[in-house]
Length: 126
Length: 279
Image 1 (spheres, rainbow over the protein chains, first blue to last red):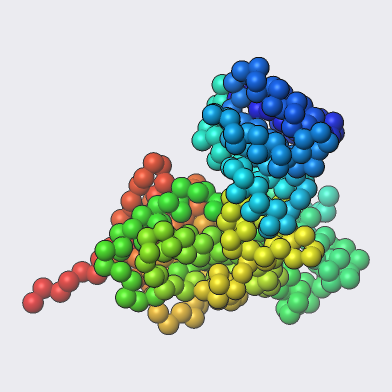
Image 2 (image 1 turned 60 degrees about the vertical axis):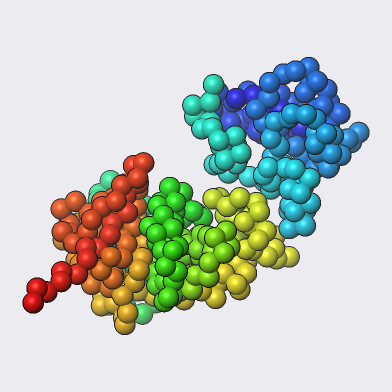
């Protein structure tokens, strides 16, 4: 399963890779803002999922979501952010996010959300 | 590690009071829990607890011992398949006829309350999707008064709320506090009553239930303890009502009163209908 992680913080990318090191079937591609993320998608890489941060320079989460919504096809998006107010969640879900992951989180939580959104078990992901 | 004789004393006490068996290879767990109690009671350690127990085990000491002897791990919609099975048998099956009486549901060993709230959300969501009014009442019991107080507050940390709940359900059924926790909304909690109950002591219920959830509790009991609790639950379950157990549990060898309904590896037990008297 190929996951595009769009987050401006290096430590977050490192954290996710460390957290998920027991799940070798998950492959992560790291970029640091929405514009880089859209660039990766344009390369026609077959991503199964996007993990999207909110507050980023150049292009933030909501702006990225707006661009993604205009694509004819795109992977599902799970927001991954410290913003945890109900109105934040509703805002991004209405923009088209499939799920919302509040930082900080544990392995079982991110695995559950990935499996629910993709409909696939990460243990058996190819 | 505490001398085995002291731990054995407490293990036997818990076994006699609750039927919970601590095998010797789990004595380290028991020791951790006794050390917790020592701190809560302000005594010097397990040895002093033991000396106190030689005189009497009562009051706060007894309650704490029983509280920490139970294991309180849970999450929302734990073992999601069982909730689909509950929906099929308890809700879908009655859609055509409607619900003339409130559904009575018992969450036995409800721990911090996620199971009772999950059932409440299941029913609310089903009612909305099917445009059917479903009156219901959930009785949530646990032997631990400490964990029941937590369940009554229905307040969960950010980690706890994300375990088992999609984001839209969190927003729909919970309010965020300024402590970065989430509290269940009154529209959900008004359906749930909480009370302390030891499954090995007499049950106070005046009416039988439509559904009883008794999950991952009997695993701590020996055979006789399991049979006793199942018998008592059966007497408080309507004929045709349902019993749900933990994913790794079953009624084989424990009761002849139930019909198992299996779906995709998940089992729900239905109490057999009352035998009709032949005129």
